[in-house]
Length: 234
Image 1: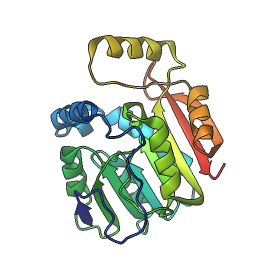
Image 2 (image 1 turned 30 degrees about the vertical axis):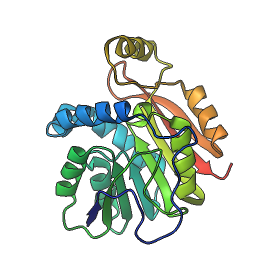
Image 3 (image 1 turned 90 degrees about the vertical axis):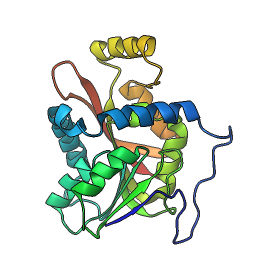
Image 4 (image 1 turned 180 degrees about the vertical axis):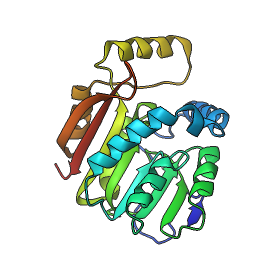
């Protein structure tokens, strides 16, 4: 296993520039880092049942057999990476996360596995060469991405032609999730962009993806989620 805190790609090739509006919000990054610095040591235990449901859904959507080269974007403590490698040990998996503390947990989880690369980075500027991956997975994190359109463009850039994007995230269609969105917006500084299934599909289409599967599901009573697979290339 290799790890890196770099935002560059040592093997060469093209890496996405910063977005046209300039540097992304330092405040948003700081709030995210602070949140997961606090949660890293207890995340797996605190969200065990939620993670089991959502990561099982992400794995199902990826299909059988699994794609060969997978990017787990916002990989957290490496739970999905561990799950995928249990199923297919020959995969090549890259994990990217903004939180150094969560990456440290992921490193401990997949230690000595040379098929895993863990990188520090963000969704709007993925530290990978274009056309690298057969599939990109974003599970339980897209609502925390500051510039969702830029992140989707980056996902398309690092995917090979006809590669898959799997997205599992909160879904605003459920009334309880609308109430949660309003509550979080009123009480917390960390911004969350919680959209409906239709809105998410439009975002994907605008970024050049073709949606081939989209459904709503729940992780626990009243926790509304969406699961989507989209193909790069329109």
